[in-house]
Length: 252
Image (cartoon, rainbow, N blue to C red; front, side):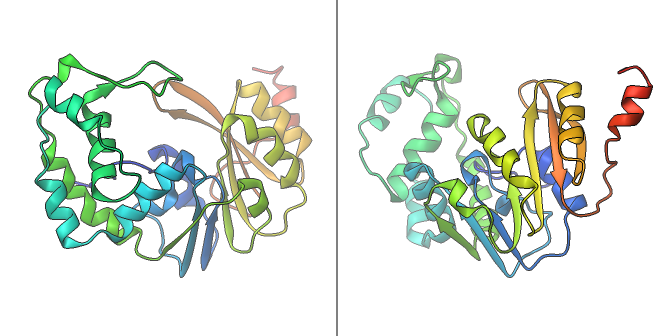
């Protein structure tokens, strides 16, 4: 059974689609690594160079820990209190470390046993996790360390990496989707773009406005089913949308 990374991996559907439809490459560049990184997808073809940009400094510190932790760091992490109860939760909240094993402990403890309102940084203990213990999930760390071994992490403005040398994986957050789309027609380097669309018609509109590129539509499940525009400037196994054929069918 495949081991899933503890955090930071792309939506599995998108990652598999990239793996089945990528061009030949020796270098991968991910300007938008905060929303998940292909570097942690075990089924990808290895690259000689893999660059991942992380804007959020805490996430950057967490990924760098997963990349280079020592044996003593890992032993310390395993020896932390992983039982879910309110007293331990409150003690964990007093951790102020901004890097290293303690930051990772706080992050995972809150991820597994905490809850927060959408858009809020406030975390409270989830009483429904009482007496849960997810210590065994830590066995995913060795895989993560292996996958991140050759990754170079950057901390720059994502748009500054477009264009870039290498195969670009462009999966921007919602506020950057349109600005990235506006650059696609001018890119000469190979890229795979994935952006949420309102519906299937929005994907067809992308195919009309970017007729020189390969536009594909796909439903991607996360918490709920979403429609995505996938755009490439190289041939792949995916079926290219033909807006004319869609219109001839009356838009059905």
